Amino acid sequence: MRVFFCNKSNLVKNMKTHTEEKPYICEVCGYSVSRKADLVKHERIHTGEKPHTCEVCGYSCSRKSNLVRHKVTHTGGKPHTCEVCGYSFYATSDLVKHIRTHTGEKPHSCEVCGYSCSEKSSLVKHMRIHTGEKLYTCEVCGYSCSRKSNLVRHKVTHTGEKPHTCEVCGYSFYARSDLVKHIRTHTGEKPHSCEVCEYSCSRKSNLVRHKRTHTGEKPHSCEVCGYSCSATSALVKHMRTHTGEKPHICEVCGYSFSSKYGLVRHKVTHTGAKVTYFLLIHVRMHTTKSEKPHSCEVCGYTCSNKYQIKIHMRTHTGEKPHTCEVCGFSCSKKSTLVIHIRGHTGDKPYSCEVCAYSFTVKSKLVKHMRTHTGEKPYSCEVCGYSCSEKSHLVTHLRIHTGEKPHACKVCGYSCSQKSSLVKHMRTHTGEKPHSCEVCGYSCSDKSTLVIHIRTHTGEKPHSCEICGHSFSEKSNLVKHMRTHTGEKPHSCKVCGYSFSEKSNLVRHMSTHAKEMSGIV
Image (cartoon, rainbow, N blue to C red; front, side, top):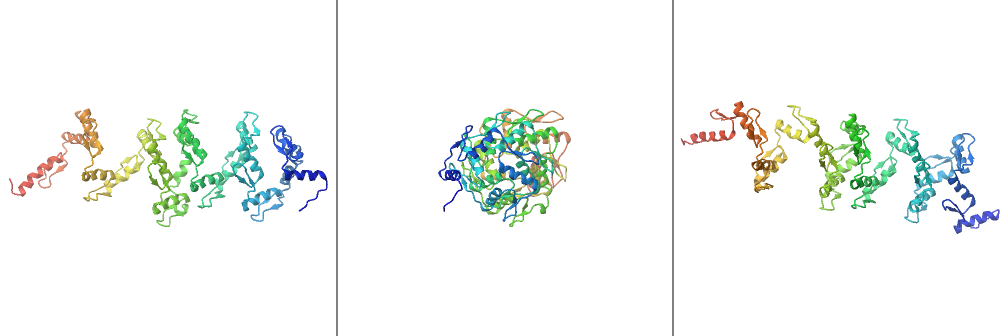
């Protein structure tokens, strides 16, 4: 197909698009173009010149095409409409770009890494990752970046200005894009969807991270220990375990933390306020079934989000996709694997601020802190007994109900605590895992070993408040106290005689046994 031009200069310009000749070069940054007019427009980036001005509002710009587009904002007209979704635009070029969101077309590709995108401007910005080019510089602190939008956002950190405000809650932001994302927390809009599992989210970056759960991709690696992760933020936090950096500082007491979450949690100790984040978690305990739209088809379990139901289904399928590379242990939850791996690495990221004791799991730190605060949030409705752990209350309630869910398969013995069953089973196996380092004595119960060690140390921690007599075992103190109180809780069912100790009752019962057999 032959194309004709009305003058020779236009033909010359057109030929350069075929030869890729770019004779016009920017003296500031080396950028080259095929037309002199394009170089003039480009140079305005460096000079800041904006010769095109709007007569209505005074807005000025470096390109005439931008002014034409701007003027439409005053007339209110958006003549270019998408036939697929009805969205309309001021300029034809914007419509062309928009249509690619429907077709998925990405005509612009990076020759270095193969990255492709729908807009040429996006490719130009992307190429700066490879070239390291940073065109935009902050006049205040010298900070430089590859994108103008990043510079605009950065400058606000000097002025403190947050011009974009949410009309719903009043929260304000430096950048409009951040406001758009924030508004989705109110509307519940989740425009980004996963093609594999139907997961949807409000941010594209979250979707990119989510997709790595399917691909297993972990592009971010620690140069110190080789740890790899799917998110940059996770690597930043991990690096602090090597550097010891704690950038989040409490303004009240100066205590510092490696994570923002740790600081938020700490601040509550000063204000006494219930942080909204924790309140939201707590409210879920009271939500009704209608607020938990995701149900398990097997057992009817309901939850508030798809991820929870996905994890729950593994209890039925037995699926354990997360495997330990060290010992082969597998589990259904990634969080469980993370905790398990700490058993190999010795990592204990949760530390007590009072006594420096550290834990592999956050829940254990929460329980430990109650030893300092004396908090006992779990109470028995029958007798008023209170304790610091829910598991202790569950065990205690069995005293009232008589429930003994743990049974021995050998002899049928049953008990209320699993730990008691473990100890009992040793009477059958003969296992004695607890040994004395002094004399080699071994026993099946750790508490028995603790008492035994006192025979070497001479320690007698249990003292009588009346006469000062002390004992190595609490049970001996209980027996001793009966010499003061006169209590005799063990009674003979035959003659009614009572004793302060069970062993005396057993000896006494043998006298009745002899009488009944005719032996005097």
